[in-house]
Image (tube, rainbow, N blue to C red; front, side):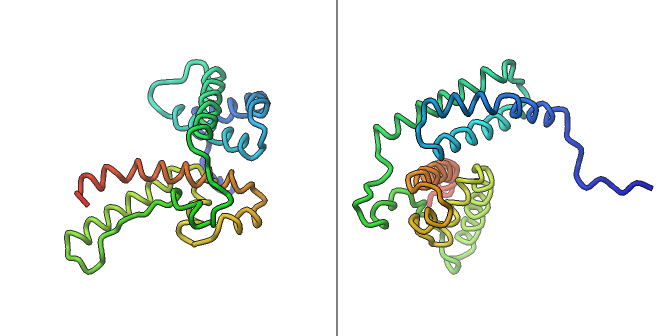
Length: 193
């Protein structure tokens, strides 16, 4: 008697995604690294593009030209990165860290536990939406957000421990905060908090 399989078999769609990622990874990495000097930033872009690809590939409308789609997404991410750096520097490292990272905080306003049943309901909706939004983040963004925002660890500590550049950690946290704000704002508007 054969032992039961330890994991679920891959679907055809998952197999197609995996094959495309394996086939295009080297070319895509070279394309990004020719345009982005910082290796950590290049890796972040690559991971973001693959994450976006998996999400898009699972939509009902199929991606016709996967290779072209990946390179177009990478180009867009690179352009976005340069625009953001020109428009708004990530941090002035001469400032104390708590000043430098204040714009990277979510500042989640939760109603108090003892503010009545409506507040308790609003609080539960916000916490559920926060968890769902955190689950949507790429792992590197989620880890930095949780470590800094929820565990209270400093960016300097995270950089020293992980070996990832401080600006890369700041960028990951910023992307996470922007995503979380966008996802939570409709709930705040609906609840009129």
